[in-house]
Image (tube, rainbow, N blue to C red; front, side, top):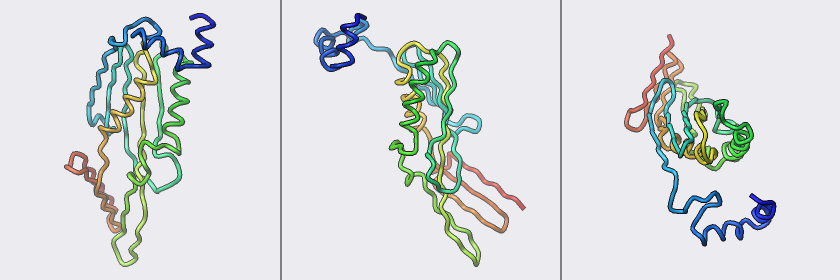
Length: 196
């Protein structure tokens, strides 16, 4: 790409891309009608993850898994995430994607409002107390191969895995035997713990 076109792209991106759209091609020469196929495979519960998704966009393969944890409500982000990539993935592209994820999944994230993740629970007994718990979503993102727009494939994998995640809607907590019970809406997720 020449210096003039790079300058036009930076100063006036609308005019830069307008000429390509009028001609019906992308800047790299592909026609607008030709696009790379996307494949999303939702695998549901895998090991101790509540949701696991594989995404293929062109030659880019991404895996994203979501694990839930329950803890006291706080001002921290509802998302904890880590991203790993194969050695063949350029480091600058990976850092660019991480920078976007820091903004998207940070404390000011609008993907999920904290109110959607709040659970009220109550101790049963004569000194009954009501306290607030919150779900935290732990995302593990793996870039298995890269050939195309990396950030787009990562965001597709995150979105698919979040849509595939089911939050338990019932919690029971007892202080006498410390038993916990978690249920999903149609009992797809069930956890019961008892300590004597």
